[in-house]
Structure formats: C-alpha cells, structure tokens
Length: 451
Image (cartoon, rainbow, N blue to C red):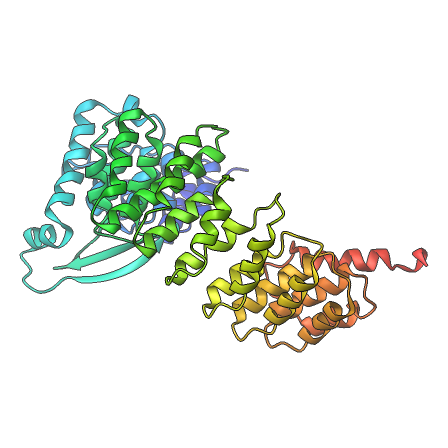
C-alpha cells in the first residue's frame, strides 16, 4: 500500500535537508510533491539552492519543481541560483530549450543580474549588501571536476562563478558576445580547471561560424601568452567535440595548429598547442617532434613523444632514436610519456625492451608504473621481462604488484597464483578491473578438465 502523501512529502523534506539527491529522486518517483514547502515555508527547491546542492536541485527540477515560481521577495528559485554565482546550480535548473521556455523579460532579468555581479565583483557586491568592512574569506572548492572560489563576507556566502553563469545564460538565450569579451572573462583565471575559464572555452568551442573562427584565429598573435593558451584550449575542445559528434570539420583547425606550432615562443602555450596538434594525425608531426626534442621547457618535451609515435605508424629510425634518448630525460614526466608510447609497438625491439626494463626501475613511481603497463601489455615473453615482473612482486606499491601479477597471468606463468596472493586484498572499485579479470581467465585456462 502506498504511503500517505504527507509521509512522502516529509521524506522528501528530509532527503533535501540531508542533501541526498538519490533519496530525493526516489521520493519523487514514489509520488512526493516537488513543490513541497521546506521548514521556512519556501519551496524545497530554495532549500537546495541556498546550500548550493545542485544535484538535489536538478532532481527537484526534473521532478517538476517550478524554477520560475515567484517568491515573497519577488525573486524566483532560478534567480536566486544566479545570485549565488553557482554555474552548477544554474545548469541544473535551466533545462533544455531555455530560450523558448523563458519569457524575454525573465531572460533579461537573469542576464542583468549575472552581468551585474560579473562587472561589480563578488567581494565588492557583498560589501555593498552587508556593509562589512573587513576582508572577505575565500576558499577554493571542486564542483563537477571544476574549481570555483567560495567567497564569504558579512555573513553572506556566494560562489565566484558569475562570469560562467553569465556565459551560460547568454548561450542558452542565443546571445553571442564578441570572442574577445569571452576571452577577457577567462584569462583572469588562467587554469583550465577553473569554472570561469572552462565555461568560456567550452562555449566558444561550440561557435563554428566563420566570424567566430576569424576572431579566434586572431588570438594566436595576442601579446599576452594567457590569451594564446586560452585559444589553444578552445581548439582542443573544438577537436574533442568534433570527435564525439561525428563531425569531420577539423582539417582547418589542424592546419592552423600545425603552422602555429612552428613559431609559438612561450613554452606553456607551445605545450598546449602540441597537445592539440597530436589529437589528429598530420604529415608534419615527426618533424615538429624532432624540432622540439631538446626544448628547454619540460612541458614541451612531454608532448614530443606523441609527435614521434603514432598508433598506426612505425616510427622512423631517427624518431625511435630520439625516443630512446628522451627515455633518459632528467624530467620524470618526459620519461613517463616515453614509457607509455612504447606500449604502441607490441612486439618490442631489443633496444625498446632494455629501455623499458630500465624504466621499471626508475626512481619516480609514476615512470615505473607506466613502464610496467607498457611491458605487461606487450607480446614480449623473454625471460628478462618475465623475471622483471617477478621482482616487482616485492614492490611496496600495490598497483605495481597487481600489474606484475597481471603480466604473469597473460603469459601463463606458473607463478601467477602466488603473484596474486602477494598482491594482497584489493579495496572497492576493482571488481571489473581487467587485471583482476585476468586472474579468473588464467584459472579458467588451467582448470583440471583442461589438463
């Protein structure tokens, strides 16, 4: 028998207050009213908004909560989300086809509020509202794989994502600000994980017209390297979007980046340009890789192996020699990338085998891990490689021991059972791990009825 409505609604209130989005969805599926008031008499959606709980806000919105419901103070839940500067909240509540569903007057009100915060600044607006004279408190938090500052002053707290909120609303409502304006919103936060940077970059990557391309291309010659790095990030996202939407229009971008890679003077920017460049095959990649193999910036050298080792192409002798030299690079990041690229030729040459055997003894744990993965996935069955895996079973790092056990299982080595015993108990998350599955397949191949 179904629970009474008041019990379902009480359970929904409890789930929202606990910030348990899964429980919120369950309550709504069971028939709870998404418009149920919270303890303060306001809709529960406002409760979720007030504590930045975008997951519960999304569940309530999808369940039928009215994001445009007028509240006693004249605001709406969506307007409050914009005011708080949380792009995750706004995304969760905006929904599809916002331009068609939201009246123009309401669109303007949302845009004006986001623009006001963006132009005024979070600290200045909080000071204006509270009159508090002291310094603001800031802390960086992670939301949906992006970083955002939380700013508190005079008893009020907002998130410093109003720039991203403005950009999101503009795109949703069909407003296309100049490319230079979006870049200007991003560059004060020169980190690809910052929400204001990533939102501007993502939105620009969606704009495919010739006018947008012309303005983007002009950033290549901007005197500020941060602007140029922003352009490279936009191009990376354009390529990513093209590859995940069956688009075939990356040729112009690739030729542009190939030319850019020849003359970019800043190391950080050049590294990002090369990262974009190696997303697709291009005839000039080996020459570019050889050009920068001894670049003074290790970030650039970390991209070189990707230029020299393509998945379906055997590297030339000079490219292979360069990779072998880079395996001795003083930067562990470079050595680690080389170790990974050696996973491509599954039939190892003696020189590559010896290099990987040296790298699995590298002082850097990341390099050891990547070299071990390349060796374990190779077709190499030589005694030297097999004994190297046996030696790794004494490693302190459990993942290295697991990789070594996996390698022995793939090679049907009789020490496989002992190897997995020495790995030790694995925590949650390894149920579907291919290295664990290899143990089961080894046992299946060696079950009694097979002998």
